[in-house]
Image (cartoon, rainbow, N blue to C red; front, side, top):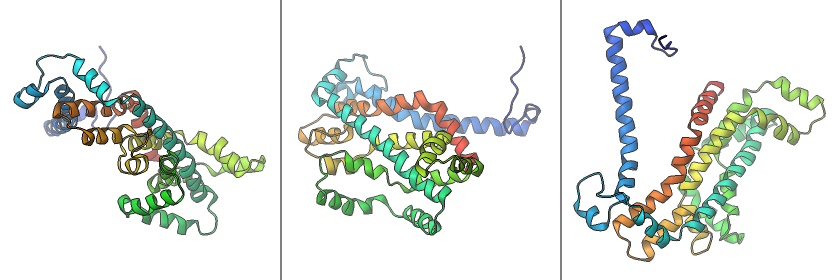
Length: 289
């Protein structure tokens, strides 16, 4: 059988050195340890969800006595979380669209159009990265209330359309695109919006995929702003519903474990589906940026 050719930093003949083998083994050990530290909490929460309250409080074993799905079904019915899943899906889809279009348009203006004063705008965007996001919650919430946009997904979507990190990622990628393609589109009579939507965005699939994944993860796990905007309404997301559920009645620890599992399922599923695209696009953006 033909041996697999190594194409990384450590080549095949490097493995004949004892020091390289030791270093390689140490790296593998560190990677395995990081995997265990990252995955163990998830596994523990899932396995703890199969336990009833008595077993959860008294047993020290990681594995439950039985793997019955009945506790999860009971908790699902108590939560009534089906509508909240739909609300979170609407929130996430709108957030991704706004994150790509609005941040992309600003990145297009700074990275490709470069009008007078674009460097000042870019510096202001980068300075905003130094500010904690929590300090903008109060003025943002006050503006939402003054505009009578409460109990609506619209302000949540727009908040993801103004993300400094996404803008910088777009700018770095757009600046690496060949200028000849943009110039040829202008000669053919395309407007700036046509160039952005028909030329630039199709060429920017790697960075769009990365930002979309970031936006999905951020929107799904976001709690504070949806809680302030959607509190008490029928549009509560999964994260808001879990918090309200824990405060509106006495909830046992085992029930909360199972409710946490419900909140973990979509991001985990998305990761397993798009993990290849995430790693490939992240590397591609790192090289081009």
